[in-house]
Length: 243
Image (cartoon, rainbow, N blue to C red; front, side):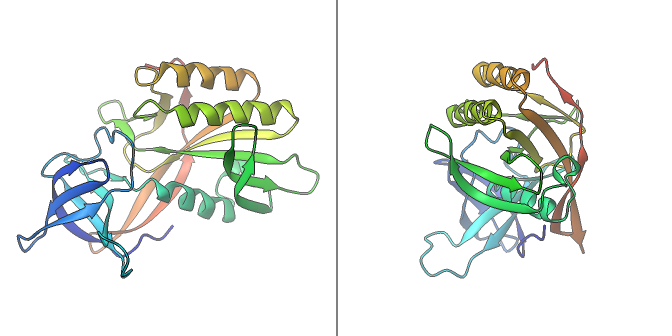
């Protein structure tokens, strides 16, 4: 997936969930929009380098968007969680998610279920069961353990999605929760039980009911030091006990 054209700045603070103040290389201070409603644990401390995109839309109050953080250890994390669906769609089109590569039709944002939900992707293929794919972003990483985790905050919406996937599986469809790497610093994955024990409980129940779960690592491409693309690389081990 190609990233938009990016410029760098230094993070000063994030506030009101959707806003962040940064200092530009010329010393000016500007406000970025932050498209991430989570806790963003470890995704940006004061002084980190951030990479932002700028829209030419005349209707936007804050034309620039915080896209990536370059952490003190050099790792990159895409904090714009809207990119996870774009990245997954790109990988599905290119048949890079091996567990889902047999499907030829990709239908984004399809209404389904009994709780007024939309599935991120409904996959269809000849002589294959319909496959409902829910995408979640991996931005929360224990850098010392190289452990990716989800969620980074209590997610009642995520709990609802698990219930919907269980229902789809019981109806005879294929149901998949896909944890999409937006961070290049992990090589295994775990549900963050300490953050949301209810989600962890539902996740284990979903697996027992036949819902599939996969987590994929990611890597960034750079051109002259500027991040220009993000790609999924391979499935990583999924640890079930939680922390």
